[in-house]
Image 1 (cartoon, one colour):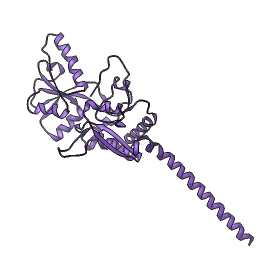
Image 2 (cartoon, helix red, strand yellow; image 1 turned 45 degrees about the vertical axis):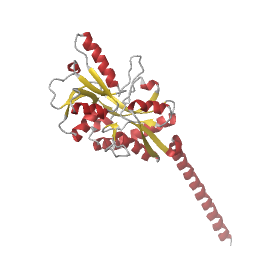
Image 3 (tube, helix red, strand yellow; image 1 turned 180 degrees about the horizontal axis):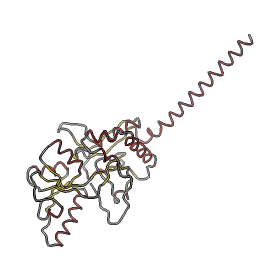
Image 4 (cartoon, helix red, strand yellow; image 1 turned 135 degrees about the vertical axis):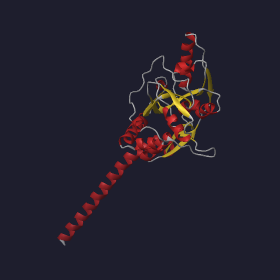
Length: 293
């Protein structure tokens, strides 16, 4: 009977140990899962996006209800890693950051590169390096540099730094006695591109990412006439002071980069994988800083 009592006590003790271990593991798992869940209202990561900038984000057809593209896949991958649902909220480009500031979305990942001016108001996580380009019809022979835009018509998306680039160039051209640029702005980048197709514009300013998309979607219609020398970096914007979100985005995007997922997403959209080796150096705030695309 003594041996039976000892065995019973050992069994009880072992059961208690297993229960305690189970509680510890469960508590640890809860601690790991809770931060991600608590970051977003109702466990949903919301992203404000302007679906007019392929291949970063766009509607595949006029009847499409959900946008597709590089940024869409990126935010979806982040949601998968964090175990939360994702909702993409369409908006005009000029309304993206105001929507973020008003708390209507958690992040803005919509082909917007990092600028000092924006970083005075918002924080951001870099994720892809890109270059600004001049895009022209494929048969263009007289535009090979920004200076060649003198007296030409250029279509650009409203609210982007492309307008600032052209305004600065206009000032230089006029100071040199050259004719100015006729700058036409449109709500969507796709509208600006369309002006090249119908012959209402000689060029547009956009990103190398869009040029890659156009070469696939509309082969032979356009060409890169000029690539601006300094690369820019796209960023996921979020409200300043959101430290848990900042840490989570940094760790998750870096993990997606390091395990090759980010490069796979880029290749899916015919973008150079080397762009995923993004610069981590954020622009410094300066009085001369201007908003960018």
